[in-house]
Image (cartoon, rainbow, N blue to C red; front, side, top):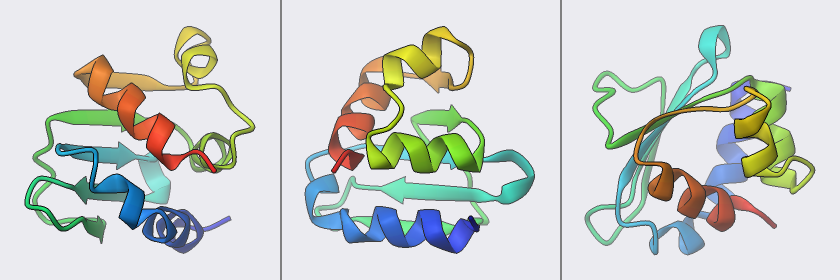
Amino acid sequence: MALEDVLSEIQARADKLTELGHTVLLDMGDDGKILVDATGGDVKIVANPDNEDAETTLALSEANMMKLIAGDLNPMVAFTLGKLKVFGSKGIALKLASLLEK
């Protein structure tokens, strides 16, 4: 898996992400970062953004991100097991997770 795979999966769900209404940074460590900005009506999805300011940051591995998107990893279980760390609003994180699921 590569950052481009995660990026394309998120872009494929951009229509659903308009409901998010917030900014979220997906931090996958050395594998890269993706900023999802759904605040202006349009959804902007940027890989390795220059500006990483977001209301909420989700820190997890790229493999766990793909499992989360595929619906193979429950966000609450991932959080409880420490596979997913949330910095900022937990509510925004859960809303994003539900919008990303297939």
